[in-house]
Image 1 (cartoon, rainbow, N blue to C red):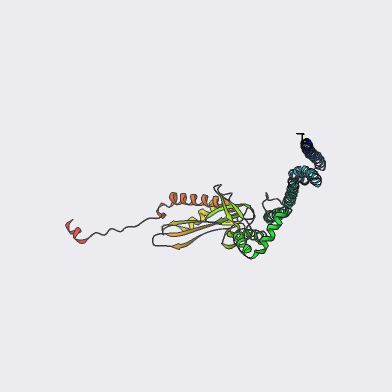
Image 2 (image 1 turned 90 degrees about the vertical axis):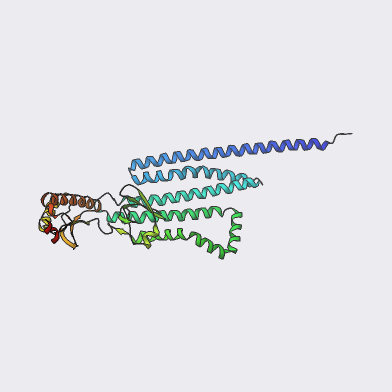
Length: 373
């Protein structure tokens, strides 16, 4: 039986097709490697040039801009090269995998550009903050600007990421089809999404409200949930309070909108401190008042704005004496109160020990007991 000549032709065609696919894969891999290499080299050269310009100009803001954009540009430049190669390959190929790779590269580029935009927002926020120092005694305006700029920059960053991810996903036709299907049931989906996202939306809106109405600012001294501390960080959804013992209290932003909070530095850091003493009725209030003035005059923690000593209550066995004194801020007032309390108690123990609180008892002798005696 004569051999079928088509068998050899099919084998040869398969070998030729395999060789062509191998050559195509080799060309694609080499092109991608070259595009990535060129992109990284271009990034290194551009970064070096911009650093040199920043150093010669001696501009801290320009150096900060170069540092912030270094990460996004290091990723973006090679991605542009990869995208160019993949688009060229997809135009001459009917492979679904190639088209999917091109779409993935497009998504990566969109997310990288979003990252770069968020970095630019952070850079602008840093420039605005650098023009207002908070390490000075009168930093009320600076703390206001730092709070507003920081909260708004973080909120804008969240919005930019949401928009960037949405735009990137819309490059896939399958996602657009899913979106069209969801729009058909937008009523139920909207209700579910609204209920699920309510805490996030409330805190984001509370962050914007705090940025403009300023119930709190960065470095404010507050008393919240019975804890004394300073506002250390304000994020789009929560506030970090550094408590006096270096613990951190994380509080949702809505708490500062819906519940009372003590703010000791709302308009000024100056504050009045109080010390309460409970003594016997025989205490010489005048001498105690003179001793308080002497203690305050000898203390560098008193700011000389005001002081007072008054009897604020009288109970069955003791009287309540309140010593009032002023200080430049909350921590100094606390130390001054401790110092005054200690020295007033020492003064009473030393000069008028009989004026300390005491319990009196009267012993009465019965008549029959006296007769027996």
